[in-house]
Image (cartoon, rainbow, N blue to C red; front, side):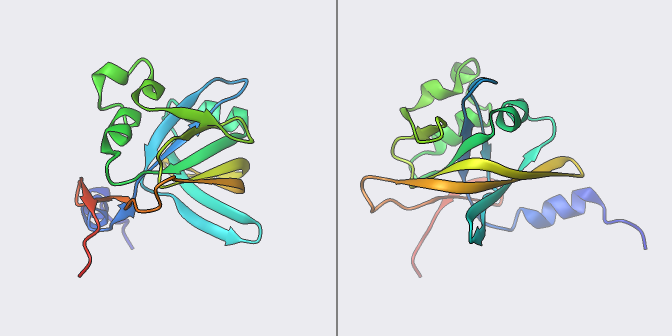
Length: 166
């Protein structure tokens, strides 16, 4: 059986809708972050999340070395933060964190103020597969948004979206 053409797979995956999160870390290896649309729950016991990071990501070495991170799930009005951490905003290429307000949580990792929810995590396991690293984090604390009325930022079909109630 021949392998699937990666271009066909990429085209098919664009039809999947995902929430958008900024993964942020800080510690001895420095402060770093990136935008992902691959964040998902992993287990309830222990509470944990899983995400995927490209092996060439400049944030990956700091994330692995620091051993802690936050997964900041973005609200619908935070697409600018997503773009900054995806390297799409020239004004923030030197310091992505300057695009928003942050506070340190229990692990010392940066939490985005106004995020829909922030998971404060310690690195539990990593697994290299293909072009990515699969990262599991044990959730030690949560920092919910203050308003409680925000909707998630969604990414589908190569664009940001907003939920619409049918």
